[in-house]
Structure formats: C-alpha cells, structure tokens
Amino acid sequence: MIHAPQPERFELVFPGKQAAREAAATPSPLPMVYCPEESLFPDVTQNLYIEGDNLEALRHLQQTHAGRIKAVCIDPPYNTGAELLYRDNFRRSHADLASRAHADWCSMMYSRLLLTKPLLTEDGAVFICIGEQELHTLMCLCDEIFGPDNRITLFSRVTKRSSNNGGHFSPCVDYILMYAKDITKLPAYSIDLPAEIVSRYKKTDEYLSERGPYQEVSLYMSALKHGGSHYPIECPDGTFACPPNGMPWRWNEATFKKGLAEGRIVFKASRRSPLIQPGTGKRAGWNIYTKMYLHERTSEGLQPKNFSEAFQNTLATYELRRLGIPFDFAKPVSLIAYLLRLQTTREDIVLDYFSGSATTAHAVMQCNAEDGGQRCFIMVQIPERTAPSSKAAKAGFTDICEIGKERIRRAGKQLREQYPEAEFDAGFRVMKLGGDRNGM
Image (tube, rainbow, N blue to C red; front, side, top):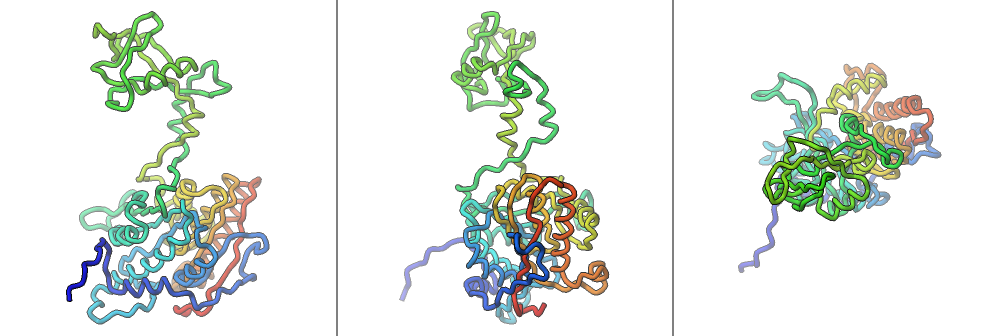
C-alpha cells in the first residue's frame, strides 16, 4: 500500500531529538522550595534566583511566566570539547556514540529552546551567545523553533585584540544569535547617538530655545539615485537651481516648501556648486542645505550595527576584579546592558537560564539604576561545584550559584554607591529545585 506523501520541511536531525522534544513536554516532578535565609530583601524584591537544572526550571516557569518574558539572554556552553554538565539522560544506541558530544549539545539546547518560546511576550526576543563551533547548528535549531523569518540578526562581537591560539586564523570573534517570537510585533531597535555624532551639531539659529543646535545637510547628494524628486528651486537672487542629470533632491517638493516656511533651509552662495541652472545647464551659484536639529535626531536614535568592538572580554575581567569575584569566561555587563536597552522597557522581565556569575542580573540592575526602570530578573543556575584548586574555591565559593548570588549582592551595593539617588530593586528570592538529577 502506498501512503500519500507527507509535507516536508527543513529541519536538523540528530540522535536524541525526539527524546528532547518529549522532555520539553514533560512537567517537572521536582518541587520548587523557597529559601528565605539565602534571599536578599525578600519581602520587597521581584527578582528570582533559581538553583537547579534549567530544564526543570523552564518547566516550572511555563506555569507562572508564560507570555511574560520580554528578553531571554543566555550564554550556553559553546561545546568546545568539555564534558557537558546538562545531561538529560536521553537514550541512544552504541552507534550514536561517535557523535555523542554534538548530539548531546543539540538535545540539551533543543529541549530548552522549545520551552523558551512560550515564555516570551508577543514582542519578546531571545539573545544567545555562541561560538563558531555550534553556530550553524544553533541557527538551524532556532530556525525550526522560532522560524527563519523571526531571525533578527547575527551580531558579531570582537572578544580580544589578538590571539595565537588558532590554526589558519587568529580567533577573536564570537556571536549573539537573536530571534523574535514575532518579528512583525518587534519595534525597531535604536541606540543613543554617539558623542562624535552629537559634536557635529554646533550651529544655532533664532529657534535655539525651541529646537536646539543643528547641522547642515546638503539637499542634493550625488549618491542618492532614487527616493526624492527633481524640481527647480528659486534661490535668493531670483535664479533657479536643480540637481544635474535629472537627479533627485533628498526632499520632495512639498516637504521642501514646508521646510522653507519653517526656516529649515539654508542657501549659500558658491562658485563650485554641483547644482545647475535648469534650461541652460550652467553651474548654479548656490548650494542648498537643510537644517537637521539635534533633538529631532536624538529622538530618532541610531540604528545599531550587527558588529561591535566595544565589548571585549577584558571589560568583564575588570568588572569582576572590582567586585572581588573570581570567575572566568563571563560576558561584559556593558554588552548585556546594551542588549537590554535595545529590547526592554522599564518594567519588563528578563530571563537568563545559564546564569553563571549572574552578569545578566548585574546588567538589569545597572539599566534600572541609570534610567529609573523597574525591570526584574530571573536567574537560573545549576549548582555546579567549583574545582578544589580554583580561585573561586580558595575564596570560599563551593559552587557557581554561590558566586552568582554574591555577585548580585556586591553589584547592587556598588551601584547604590555609584547612583545614590536611584531607586532600584537589588534583592532576590532564592528558589531551589529539590533533588535534581545531578546530585548537586
């Protein structure tokens, strides 16, 4: 008997995928236990610190936070060959063992990403830090779960100036893969104007108190081939000017007339103008500029680039050293704060279920201290034991959770000293998942 063909779709196939899908659909059997003695300001805080396997935590959060998380920021293991901590006991045959490390990583991420999507608000997004080892795999997983059309961008970050660890190339970049739950509902991202752009706005006019300083921008730009319109403009001496070869102005005629009436047009006499006199083809005697006011440009912001050299690893090293926290491989607070400013408003919830040293919690508090926001965080971390010979163990930290909680305490205190007038939530309630399978 020949069965009717089933619809086909692109997807990543790996050993353990079905088990990972089933794991995501299984309710957590573990209780969530509140630990007031380890919490900070528990009576007033809205922040959560969950200790335990993040798969179990994500299962619990389906019941309490579905559709409520505006931003998920995670820094999962890069799968560089180390033993994977998150072992979900997926069954596979001996034939699969050759690809065990790769398949284990795929299974671990797949189940957790399946549980991530329902937690997001309709305009929510996930930001995933990743190295090149599993970049393509992660993109395939996210395309399947979130949809390729909901991919916001692949953000490249310079991690260090130089390295001699590579083969043919010196490795100095990692990535942040960004996906929206529904990109049609995601507002456009913008950042504040950098100082070098603001410094260009030096000119003033009679509208200074109302409009502030401005800079002049040519109404004709030779690189602009489309988008405007071609028409003659009367200059102060009664002559006319227009772009050469039928090229367009930046503004259409109606916008120009409105700008002229509002005092937004500047005429400057010039013997080297690129403009011509219509009809004769002779060089016009004027250049024409529009006034771009700083406050209008500031309100628009600047579209961010998908590449940055501003968030190198040395920043994270410095930040942790200032706090007296011994931890390797953390991301800079400024990087996570940058992402949060793009994605969140002042009262949103941020989730990080690979919390590590709690950089994301630090970034949430910093954003709140700077803009008066009331964002709250949910950190999830499995209590991985610190190596006995490590600096962390020698400093008295028995596991990663102890490092993360202490970092939040110290960062909150540091930010209160830095922003004494700011009111922000620097507390957290500790919740522990009982009897997690890793025995930690």
